[in-house]
Image (cartoon, rainbow over all chains, first blue to last red; front, top):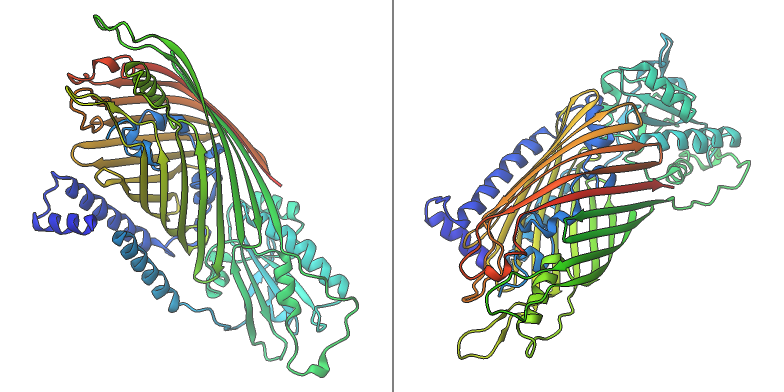
Length: 95
Length: 534
C-alpha cells in the first residue's frame, strides 16, 4: 500500500527529486535505462565476439576468489548492506 | 504485501508472455560445408547422411565448453563407434564446431587437451546462428535417416545436461520402419544423472587497535542434473575492547573486553524447470545465532552498564526464507532475476529513559521484506553489466530503496576493470553512496594481480530517541588494497588486503556517551579465499 501511495504522491508532485520518492523514481528510471540498453543488446554481440567477456574475471561470480569486497565492511557501512533486518534497517538500537 | 503480489504478477506475466512466443520446435536443416580446423580440406554435413551427427559448438576461451567437448569425445564418439551405432543401428558422429577464428595455437591446445577427433571451423558462427545458437556450450543433435539430405534438429541445448542426456536422445532416434531396426551389439547403458561438487572456503578479517572481527565461510555446492544445492556455514567472531567515554560524575561506566561469536547456516536451491525459455526457480532458507555486528555488541554493553537493574539480557538470532525466478535471456551472457525474501531478526534493542517515566526497552523483533530485481547482460564484446535494484520494508521504518550498477570492462587482452556504484536511501534523511573499483591484470594464464579502491559515504543514521541518540553520525570511508589470485583448471586461491579508514562526522548533542564507538579508526583488511571443483 505504501508503495502505491509513494508512486502516486511522486507523480502528483511533478517529479520533485528532492524527496525520497524522487530517489525511487531516479532508481526506476535508471533501471529502465540500463534494462533498455541491456535488453536491446541481447543477441547483438555475436558468439564469436564474446571471448573477452567470457574470461573468468569478467563474470559476476558468487565465489570469494572473484569478489574483492570484504564481507565485514558491511558492519560499518549501513548503506552498503543489502540483506538483513536489524543491520539493513541502519540502526540496531533505534526504535 | 500488495507490493509483492503486484511485482510477482508483473514479472510472471512478462516472463511467460515472452516465453509463450518462443516454444521450441523440431526444425528441418539443410546441409553445410566447412573446412577442417587448420586445413583446406572441406567436410560436408551430407557426408554423414544416414547418420546421427552431434554438433559441439565451442571456443577455447569458454570454460564450461571444456568438459562438454571432452565428454562428447570420450563418452559419445568412442562409445558409439565401439557399439557400431545407436540403439537402432544408426552410426553416430561427433563434429566439434570451432567458432573462434583467432589464436589458433590456443584452439589447438584446447583440441589436444579434450581429445577432439573432428573439428570444423564455423567461420563467423554462421552454422551456429542458423541453428539458433543461444550461447556456448551449445550441443545439437542432427538426424538424417530418411535420405534426401533433409536434416532434422532432434535436440539442441545451450549449456550442458550431461553426456547421458545426449546418449538418451541418440538412442531414442529410430527409423520410421520398425523392420529396419538392427539388433544391438550390447544393451543400452542405464542413464545416470550427472553430478558435480564444488567447495569454497573464505576467511575475512577486519581489525583496528580495539576491535577484531573475523568471518569464515565454507560452502559446498552440489549439482545434480539441472538442480543445484548450495549449503553454507559461517563462523564469525567479534572481539571488542569496550571503552566508554568518560564523563564527570559518571563512575559506573567501566572498560571491559568482550568476545562474541555468530554462527550462520544457509541453504539455497536452484532448479531449472524450463529449457527454452530457460527458467530457474530459486529458493533459500537459513538462520543465524549471535550478534550481527560489533556496534550492537558495544551498545548492548553500554545499556547493560547504564541500566543494570532493568537491563534484560539480549540473545540475537534470525531466520530467513526467500524465493526467486531467474530467466536466462541468453545462456552465459544475460539473465533477469526477481527475488523476494523475508527475514526475522531478534536484535539487542536500545533503551531510553525519560524523566519521570520508567525505562523503556526498544523493540527487539524486526521483520524485513525485500524485493530485488537483477539484470545481467553483455553490452559489447568487452563490457558485461549487472544492475540490481531493491526495496526493503523493515518493521517500524520507512521503505529503503537501494540499487547498484556494476560494469566489468576488458580494457585490453590482460587488463580487466571491475566497477560498481551503489546507492541507498531511506526517509526522512538517510542517503548512502559507494564506489568500488578493481583493476586486475593477468600476469600469465594462472596468476592475476589486482589493485582495489573503495569509497563510501552516508548522511548518518536515523534515530528518534529524545535524550540519548545511539545513531551513527555521517560517515566516510576509504579502502585501498592489493590482491593476487592463482587459478588452475579446477581450483583457485586468492589473497588480498590493505588499509581501510573510517571517519565519522560530529556527534549530536545527545550522543556524547558514544564518542568512542563513533570515532575515526584506521583498520586493516585481509581476505583469503579458496575454491575447488570436483
